[in-house]
Amino acid sequence: MKTVRFAVIGFGNIAKTHMTALRAMPVIKRLPVVPVLDTLVTRSPDKHAEQAAAIGFRSVVASPEEAAAAGGIDAFDVCTPNARHPEDVAAAVSAGAAVYCEKPLSDTYERSQALVSNAAEHPRLITQLAFTFRYHPAVMRIKGLLESGTVGDLLQCNISYRRSGYLNPERPVSWRLESGMSGGGAISDLGVHVLDLIRHWFGELAAAGGQTNTYVKRRKDAAGQGWTETDVDDWACIGYTTESGVKGMLEVSRIAFGADAFEIRIVGSKGSIVCDLERQAVPAVHVLAGSVPAVPSPASLALLPDEKTTMGFAVDSHFGALHHFLLRLADEDRYPSLAPSLEDGLKTEYWIDRILGKDKLA
Image (cartoon, rainbow, N blue to C red; front, side, top):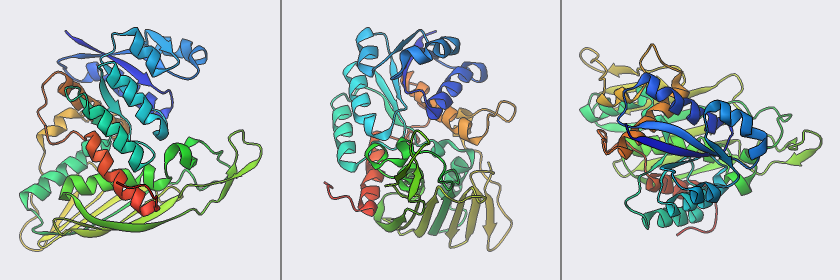
């Protein structure tokens, strides 16, 4: 069976989530190709060499250019800080390899444009962005409900995506809290997922505006010794209208201590759909008249682990996205409208930069 040899760029938590999903995939699913963790790209190759070997990597190198020069890589999995994505993707496409890139596309709309333009010069390469909530089982079911007209004409969708890990100022600064590396805080980390779901369910945005705020203004520095100013938001609120006429409010927070949730509230002319993506695989449907219909089971649920092999919503969604990526590489894409493109990331970055008030917009 043909193998797909991966170079994983980065060795943080998200990279390890990708590795977990890829290692588990041949155990859980019958695949047309076999994913192989071939090369780990990390700034500290000596430090991580032993662990990388235990995971199964054939080699450990210090840069994506070094991995590309060695040859034999079929796909680069980009799991680095946002500001590094353009250079990492450029190294991958120059090597003629497919690209699976973590969200957001980069730290600014302008740099995201350059990344997309560079990739577009290699149109035969498969690329995919990790908007993994498209692969959440409830999101797939909601998509089916909306397409079936179960709740009638779509009027409104409000979403609140709340995490809590950054309320404590004792948590030292990392790249996610530095605008020069991340591009933004909660709005870049969580807001991209929320905006992508709106586009995925309802179509293009016609307008979006909002506000951000930094409540925890000082944090421990990276060494955990002194204190430093924080220059990214930890909360944002966005009002939007889609071209199809759906309106709503979106909230994202990284300081919602004790209230972690990803709440979806969709209202149509005949009823509503309610779900918490942190806890529910099946949304609740409420209708004004008649019996509540059965929630559909889309064919794309086959991308996910079943109830006996589940690793939790977070890892399962990454699993489904990477599974789809492998099917696309094998030219067996059964769900052509599902995969998030680099252009999808560019469109969300456009609105985020507008809300953040960044000057350089095309």
